[in-house]
Length: 320
Image (cartoon, rainbow, N blue to C red; front, top):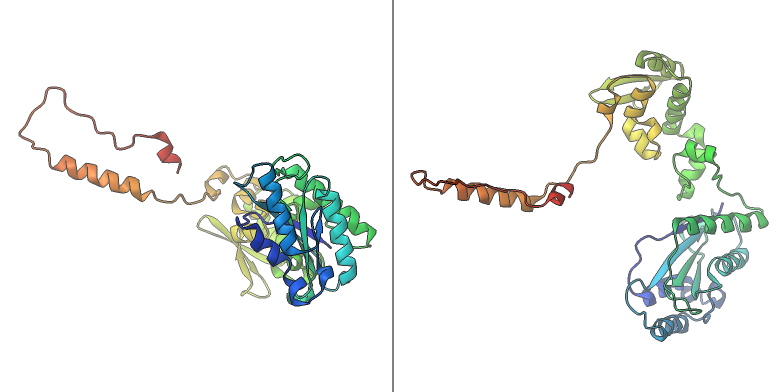
């Protein structure tokens, strides 16, 4: 099950990330663990070429590169196949316009092989800056699935039904995926989530009806404050709040608010969990100063027009 993901916040130094991608190339003294697409098979020369491309088109500022990772499960693929897989993938995704440094890591924890792709931010072909949309990322995943099938590897089910069941399009953690798909019986959290999902699918007429169905599945349901808690009937130490379960499995269907909504509770919106807004300490300081200044006013003095106090001068202060 090869998993492809983007590193969202890369640094600005392209030399550092290329050297990191070439880590096992250096450590293992294996020249086949690093290669370039449209650039040299040497980390130093590939970095130099990428930088010269930026200078040629006068685009040395801003984003320097895009970093992606393609990972395989333990013992899923041989080192040789991983190298050809990653090369094919890089050529199909980026090879028509960009220079790409590819580094294969073979000594990760758990024996998992993975590949790093460092894509230059400026195209050698036309000098345009790299810009990949969410749809481009989906296309990369489709390419990954196509290559995986050629190697006889499992792929992630990204169908609409599977996405709804998982609560997200792709599980980026190999362990989480296998627990969810292959080891459901060993995860009491997933068992609880399945019980909740099945109970909701039966369209309970009330919260009491939902509680009865959950009890038949082996779970007590307790309303505590503005959150529902599920307690395993056979093992009371196995308990979890609905909102915590929804957060862990990234699936809002399991949240207290949604359960109350399905159970036709009129005030279910009261149970929607809203993020806490950070306190704007600057505004508090300004307000305190304004109040102190007002307190210093001489009450014996009079004025014909009075005065206005504007403690908030900008609407966007409330949005922070």
